[in-house]
Length: 114
Length: 111
Image 1: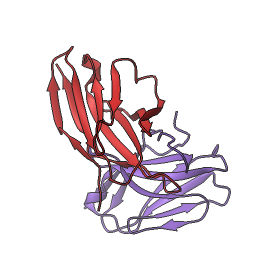
Image 2: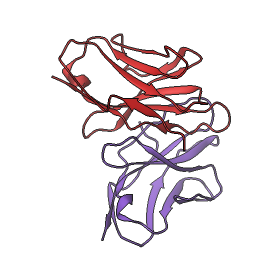
Image 3: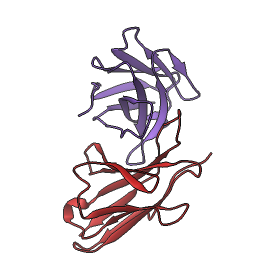
């Protein structure tokens, strides 16, 4: 069964450093998303992406965040200058265009900012 | 904010049916009811969704009341691996509308 994959599974970085989280969505999906979950809190929407553009973004997704689809398979989330409060699980999701718009999630990347 | 209300936690004996309720009294006519679950800190896992008719798949059944103001997710024979946080979410079934997660119900399946 096709699935969303994410790398790395765990990323440790120093405050102020840049990190790139990578995702490979399900191959025939056209809509891509990033969510995050701070330990013990709810899963929160960050950004959605379609046709090489951001479709929607939340208040959390400020100028330090960016997303890119650098090739036909990867979808990346970049955090330009990490802060302690960026420590969280980051989940990528994808959905197929059309009537079946169920979002399928990857296993997540645990980001720890020291 | 989430448009649904769920109990904080529930217990279920292994092998029994787990019935997880959800209230969504302000649901709109074009909004579907989705259920996801999250085992420990893994990515949310899609379970089932429906509009107004009852739905069943290999994982679960979804019962939606006639007025659509509430629903129940049924795991027919719960196992220890079904221990997770279960989220009930309402959203339009089109476009790329983000999912809005609440706190969900923490289901503990007990041997």
